[in-house]
Length: 345
Image 1 (tube, one colour):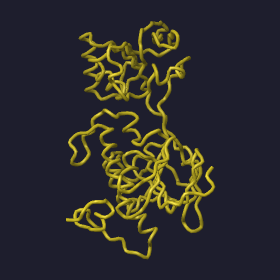
Image 2 (tube, one colour):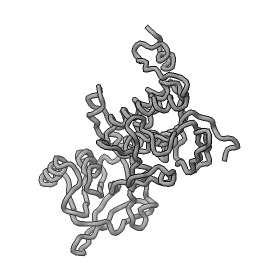
Image 3 (cartoon, helix red, strand yellow):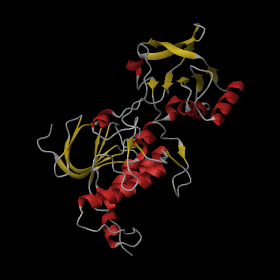
Image 4 (cartoon, helix red, strand yellow):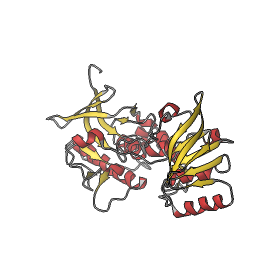
């Protein structure tokens, strides 16, 4: 553990799209941020689960992929010098009498923060793992829980496990590149009806194969290389499916983790906030994005951006109560231009 905690204006817990935009809004107001995230890279679900999936409801951007959105946000916050502390979780948070917070992470990083923003999406999460022997040993080589490079599966025998949007989206996406077999434990799907219809149409045409009401039982491995998977049907019958790679989309296992111990008056797996400041029940701790809840809450990225803007003004007012927080426009304000590192007209 470091000897002295790092002084910082705001610690942001979560480096997804809303957490990144929170950096921008706080930066415009002259506040410095540190971001802590359990993932290995910024981007949250956008980068981890659907980096190539199109997003259509970001204002003024007709369409972009999840990763393109994150790349744009990272570029946008460059002027503010935010510091990232990745592959670690906030493990301790203690309020001080002066309204500041002592924050520690699972990696031993310590902060002395004047405010805290929780932007952790659905909380700390990991993909649900395939629980069969040897699956853990093959993770990252032949067993995959996310797709970073679709081209690596070109020409391969590929089995996809799952019946939600991610499973069907990748089955449809990779159908032209690989030999696809989709295995689902039910006959009903949790994916968009249009995707289910298209999947079954491709199966009828012989483009891909569907195996329903079946579960993974065992993997076949030869000298560290995956050669197939055995699945068990509802009737107890088994069949062996040859495959080079396995994509597993069983969804996420969300958890609040240590956040649940911060006296935030959680409601289920969400944190209630007011809609003026997006402050939690603990003064100085704010929550934006999918982690929060309030009457009329909609879990949309664009709504999280709005929440981040209002939270930033509330934080500025809390940290500098004797100063009036003026609303300034990036179009015309010399101060905004200075903070953004651009020339004023």
